[in-house]
Image 1 (cartoon, rainbow, N blue to C red):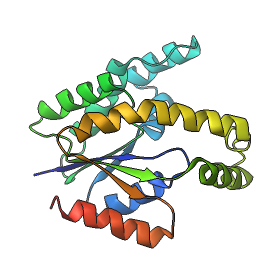
Image 2 (spheres, rainbow, N blue to C red):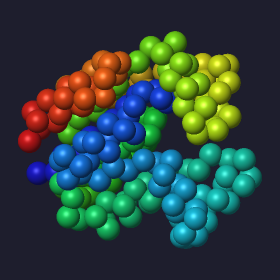
Image 3 (tube, rainbow, N blue to C red):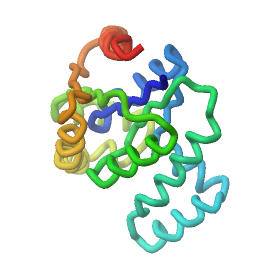
Length: 192
């Protein structure tokens, strides 16, 4: 049986780092929707071009396009033992679409794990990251706090969606990377 995880956390919570570590340990494919969009756009795939047409006009990319990209990732990686979804789903309709996609392949979401990090810690982390990355959206405290609020508003319903049947859990996302990884691994080991 495949392990399919949704790794949740605000921007700067460490989910990208932890997703890579989990992917390596459990032979899972880490699917970051941000990375996926960038790759599809760069390769000028049909779905990438469709997404670009929406983005160029200032519109959100429809869920159907994102699900199409996710479907492609799932299909071209049959040898992995599951997937870690990072940055998706963010809304209830996206949860339903992801569930339908996985069900069509005889799979389902095994667990949603939320890394809990408070807002002030996120501000500190992202401002520190901005000094290295040069990302302007990581430097401005007001922008960071707005992103955190959007995350909080959007993720609560998604967390609750998977919590209805006990598939959502929260773990502390503050501490050293190894300790957080050990806690995440203990959650995944319950699924193996």
